[in-house]
Amino acid sequence: MSWQSYVDDHLMVELPGGGKLSSAAIYGQDGGCWAQSAGFPTLDADQAKVFVSGFSEPGSVAAGGIKIGDRKFISIGGIPGECLRGRKGAAGCCVKKTNTAMVIGIYDEGVQGGDCNVIVENLGDYLIGQNI
Image (cartoon, rainbow, N blue to C red):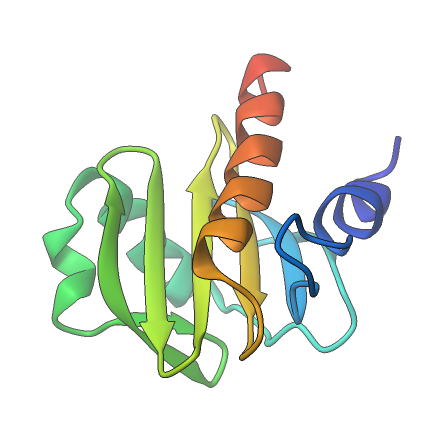
């Protein structure tokens, strides 16, 4: 299975509460893009480094927020060592750390944050189980 099919077939799908993610991607922890949906904001290597340090120290992203391309979300916590979650108005994001990658989902108004978290974190957990 290609990385693109993970994004298309597992992230950009109808969510349990209705709606879909507005965009999603899988990036290596080095900032390299493995696959992304159309319209996903470009994540640069510096932003990826902030995520990687934020997984181990969530407070490090609290001050600057979670930046994905030109979008900025207020950090609303997550699970230390596992995921970061952000929100801006009715929109938000979830970033799940795997062994070597990051699964990222962005949602807009009309989608429940919990639905985004479930879909992103479930794929991340699957990849962890595959030692990815």
